[in-house]
Length: 260
Image (cartoon, rainbow, N blue to C red; front, side, top):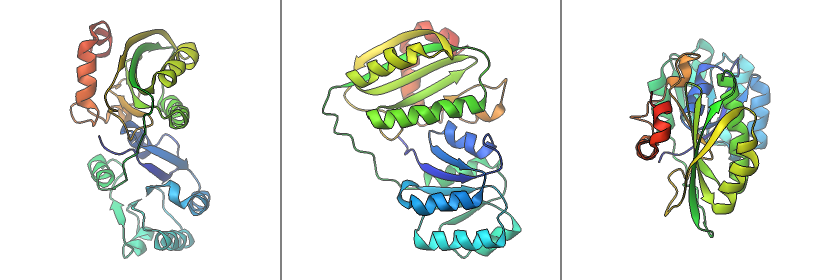
């Protein structure tokens, strides 16, 4: 399973193409619209980020700041190709992105970033919990990102990992962790969330190992009718694809909704 990366992102709008792509591929972007605020955050939490992604045109002063930051810590940086960014091409670990629609290059860049595997002691017996539910009302990219932000924070604290799927108003979520962690999340929080209904527990089984050990909460969507950006990931090529297909095929009551 590929690593989930913490990426510092500077962009104009929270729901821009690059951040949505990062979320869809299970990564955790910290989103800033102001470059100075982003650089301050990076300086204060330098060891919290695995990479930097910038899709705005920086001023000369901001370019100098970024150059100094990258000199202080060798972290991969992906920049939208603009004239002001050419001054940074001499800096190590800089990659220029010709277009924010060049998803192939973005994914290649992400795959090239090495991150130590997250280690879990798993002193308690490991369980996998899978549930399905139906969204209440429309679901936008912003809604998905807000859900993932909260889920990833809580899951990290509880040492729960997993993946979230969305398709045409239906949700499916895989949680893995201790029995207490996954069941308390499901019964005390998820089942009571008013943003979805018809919450159905499909699987609660003991497991021998984590399938998503480096994902606090990965994400996959095949939604196309509301926002094409959320369908960038492909179940055939997605890192979690084989596991998800197997589990979906074993849950026939749900596949008639999710795979229709």
